[in-house]
Amino acid sequence: MSNTFKAAVALAGSKIDIQEFQIPAPKAESGLLKVDITGVCGSDWAYFQNLPKTRGPVILGHEIVGRVQSMGALAARKFGVKEGDLVALEEYLPCGHCHFCRDGDFRLCNATDWRLGGHRYGATGLNVGSGLWGGYSQYMELDINTVFHRVPDGLDPKYAALALPMSNGIEWTYLQGGIGPGQCVVIQGPGQQGLSCVIAAREAGAEKIIVTGLSNPTDQKRLAVAKQLGAHHTLAIGEVDLLETVADWTGGLMADLVIDCASGGTESVVSALQLTRKRGRVILGGLKSAKVPSFDSDMIIARFLTVKGMRGHSFESVEMALQLIAHNRHNVQAMSTHKFGLDQTEFALNTLVGKGAEDAIHMTIDPWA
Image (cartoon, rainbow, N blue to C red; front, side, top):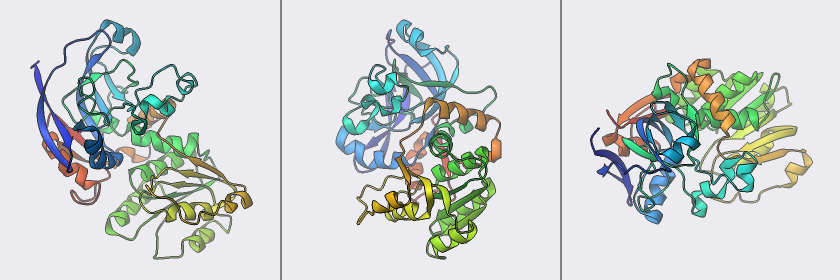
């Protein structure tokens, strides 16, 4: 094995620079991962725009699949995996001893929250430790608090990289949203998160799955994919009356669960409350980066709604996602549409905002291509 390797480094000004790094010296409390492939997440765009300005250069990429190359003595006792194992990583690097970690919900640990100065894979600068915190790289250093999932035998790493977006769909739709047989779900936003929610709803036995999107060409194509994955109805906002159409499709009952996966405008928060039946549930998962004007909290009271802000996934949902992907339930592997080399990382990131490849749903970066 060479002592040097390449990684794509995000710089201020929305630029990617391919740089060469030294393999880090072995340490008792860490390990080394040879990255097979890393998924491109929608949140990578926000990191690309902001983190290089606030934390200096950073190696992005947190939907990481790779093989454990080596482990120090302390790390080996903590990791619970063997050298050579193909693993999928979670982005979280929890402390392991706070209230949330002890309660089994380590995604809420402050140590994992980059907004609070915490560290996580794909969102930690080169100025911290070895700097090898991201998956857009040929190798990564493994922190002692890494959360591992073994990839099922025979599953192509390209598809295993779907584990985190698919786990969000399972978490939001089933584990937190409580969707089940005989129920109706409306999913706002047909991106990879929304499409993952479609698959999760179908797996959970939902009777009616409705997906909404915009009237632009990108969303129109993704709405067609939503139908292929199992959505019963799709509609483009503005082309028909949203509330009247959903009322018609549900016999006036509206939805048991509405999941807002849309990013950007705040209008979908308001419509989520309007689309939900009395005693229904609302999951808010799409970041808006803006306050909702004239927010009507009385609607929540009058309709006896349960509204949850949703953040990431649990260990359980990632395990469930890997099994669903391994068996290609509901043709989930069709969500993996594009694979790029390390030198195409900037192009892939720009694709997230419509400035790159066409018809992309879930993209991956192969650092060895």
